[in-house]
Length: 62
Image (cartoon, rainbow, N blue to C red; front, side):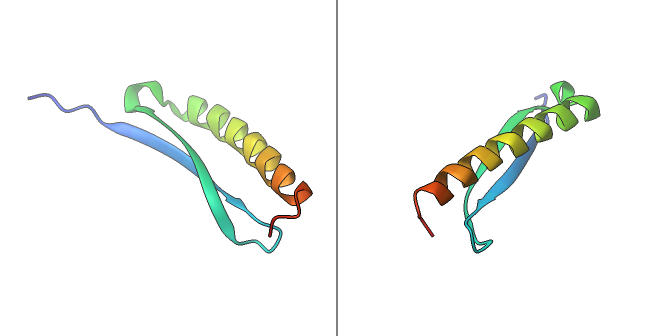
């Protein structure tokens, strides 16, 4: 039986106190997760994390 490896990238979302309250992640088969692609995806994840964190701060949620 053949086995395919997977690669997952993830970043936490933190509240205004620096406490993690959620995380977002992306996973794919490793052959599609080249180092260059991983850098691209981490950049996208960081932007999305900032959007989520900003939205949560604007709601006055801890």
